[in-house]
Length: 139
Image (cartoon, rainbow, N blue to C red; front, top):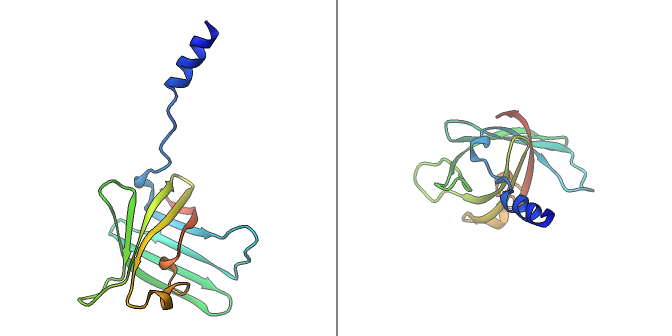
């Protein structure tokens, strides 16, 4: 009897989906891997209007803010970020939402395009590879 109840209980449990795309909007602070010393901070703020504002606070090179366009895919798990340029060949990056909840956003980069992506890597924050954020404001 106990084993039947245990099996029934386990079958009834469903793991919650770690991705809630409705939680994306708001401000997120980049987290660095353990042991990495950051000389500043990076914030991504997703607006309701499809604008991603990236704020970088750097002790050595100063502070700057840049705006990009973003869009979630129909399934709510793919995120595309690009430079809002008129014509030409805009740079873009695509990410898969690995986790998006009230406190944590984890993005895995799945693609990137730029005329010189090597030059941009490491200098343009949204071209980063996999990245983890903690919620600072918003949803």
